[in-house]
Image (tube, rainbow, N blue to C red; front, side, top):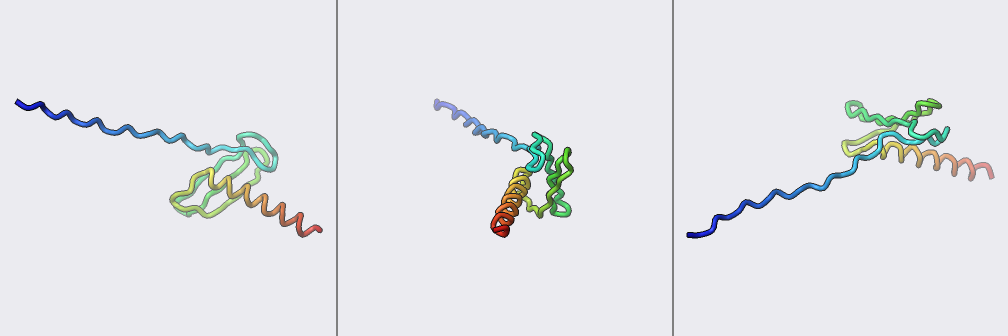
Length: 89
């Protein structure tokens, strides 16, 4: 008599850590006051500060996460600041 084959256990999936959806504001520096929302129906992503009411909107894709919207906002702030510094001289 032969030995019965044992079933292979399914591979366990590694859990991905959830990314933040609340960030600190680049204008008022208040921690965890910026909330990012994604409207997939209109393909718009918006980051808004609940303290100073500053906001930023950008277009999104199916792969966009809230951290992407916040990063684009920070990049845009840096771009504007470097443009003002270069233009003032």
